[in-house]
Length: 135
Image 1 (cartoon, rainbow, N blue to C red):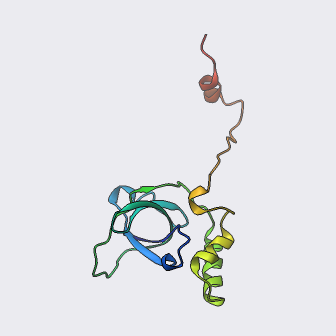
Image 2: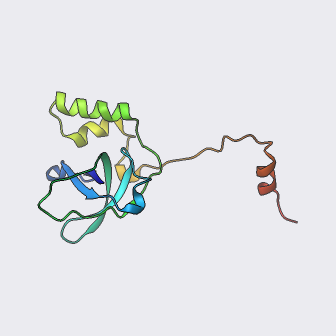
Image 3: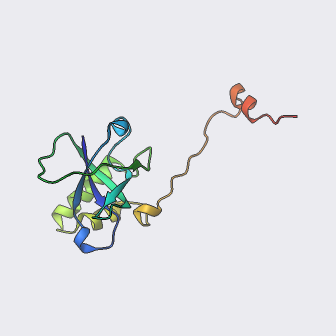
């Protein structure tokens, strides 16, 4: 499996997709609308990239590098917002990076933080046991 990604960069020359191979260890966890770490350029500098599409086959005459790590365990935006970004890009002939920026949280892709809230029942016996202070 291969992932098409957009590199988090301000350069207009990098406003295109790049393809990376998904290692077998990530096949169950990779999904669109998540961030990954990838090696980029001749020096293989580790950069943050945004996965926008997963494909099974790629016809390439060059060596495809592998994804290093998956940053997010869930999508940053919904499929509907992804579709909207691609529609805006095609309709208004804007760079895809600019369109994605309109539907993403208002910061750089690498600076997005995800917070979790514990919504379990407070009277849960197992949680009470775990939260009990030792004497």
